[in-house]
Length: 264
Image (cartoon, rainbow, N blue to C red):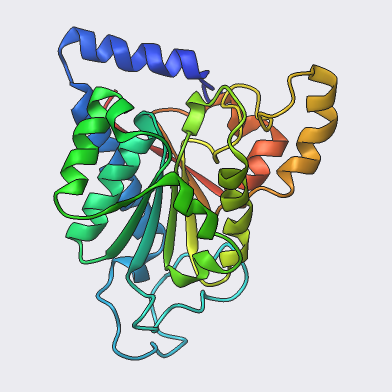
């Protein structure tokens, strides 16, 4: 049976490894980002390939993973979108993972736009280091600019990365970030969408949308709310599956779940 971890158990495993001296938090964050990019390129090799000058002919030989939603995405072969990514970074270490992903994509030749939820000065130490590393090569848009992330905003990109909250979320998110997540679905079939750990807005331990303090209301309304949240093509989680991945409301939004080995 696959072991399912709570958020607290995952944090304890990471902390024990750090305290033992076998790895640093920064190294774990770097491994996480590297693993996400590797998983994306393994699932969709066309994203790792150089940007084509013309649409590729269909029916070529070789094995290619099947798209998770119908026909191949419309951005393939379109020079303006084929190497563009947007990374939504949160105020914790999930956001730090997102900054690593953004940096690695940019180093691979991608045009990357990054949004940050919260105050950069209040980021945890390791996430702050990766924010600064990203800031040396790219810009960061503030959270209020997420208002424009609506309608077909995400159709402008080939790849959307949700690194907002992960498994550590314990309180409701602000309405405009909710709106942003709800509009991720509008970007299909133009883009691929990837969540880090769990799709943001879901509790990593319960698999429910975090919104309603009353348990009865949460149970009754979470399914309705979940249907409005963004569906992802892939969720990349670290070390082990989390409890939320086994809960229908959350799992339905995860797409393909990939466990990234970060050496723990």
